[in-house]
Length: 121
Image (cartoon, rainbow, N blue to C red; front, side, top):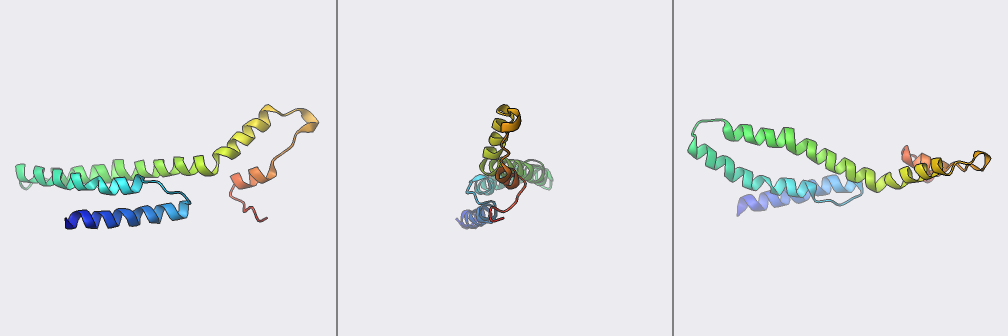
């Protein structure tokens, strides 16, 4: 009961802390936090079966540091890129495909947004 409530509140707050700055709502962080609940029971079961061993600790650190964090960063980075830059990259590809000498129109606004310039400039 209490473990679920603590992990649920923590998962919601983690998702808010990632979603607000990135301007996108995804559930990757939420699911990763909630996925630790079965991991707690697994490591407790291993600790009961092999008392005094560090197997549960090793499983936690491998899943947290070597799998979980890099996976989260990749998922959020890919989603952020698709939302904020994919249309600009398509516009650049179209520009290259339609380049006809002097009739070339350079989308400076799209290029500026691609490099992070404000639309107010």
